[in-house]
Length: 261
Image (tube, rainbow, N blue to C red; front, side, top):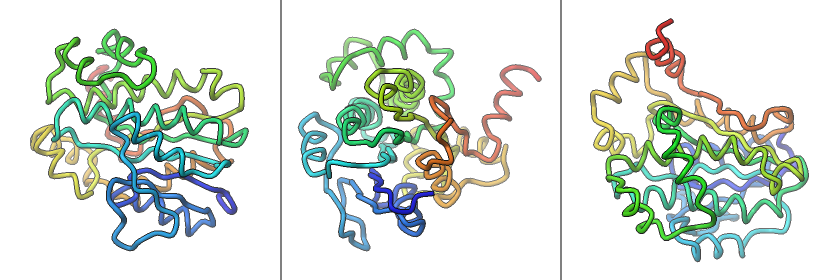
């Protein structure tokens, strides 16, 4: 279902992004990778780019072909570098890239955002999420953080809350909807990637260990990449505005506790 398609994958230097790019290539897709670091194995179609600034996003877009079939937004920060950089990359930069790439996506194409179980609280924090996600364009993130008195420890979960809310909104925005571009998300639980230690530092060992215990093991990049690529494929052509929990049942377990069933 990916043969002959051109897929843009961010965050290809390691972890989920690396495995997504590798698997897409094995499934017959042409892959263009983006990262701030060059992949260890090298890549003929690689763009060194930074999503943390408007100019960085523009430089990436300027190097893209005129036609793409899908965008997999995998790149993200753990929150260890602070709330400003985390929001800039994980949400505002990701959104800016998606909006800029939209005219290059074929009709019926797809955008897949890698969110997280850490964004589970978007409903409880809905008003804050609506306010921050409603800011147009790529704002001065430091000013936004100051205005809303956001703390560094809020950066990662907040960025994923915004991403989940925007995924649902974007599915019905004319920029995407009028050309049949589907916008979906995949939410992993804890995944054994190079930045898992950073997540432990940000979220705490107790939270991470509890999540792993609920489902029996941490996930791997190989568990997540197929879900991302399914949503990129025509097999998901009637799936739009959806968050796919690729977490071994973690969200189901949390729902049972929170909702009391």
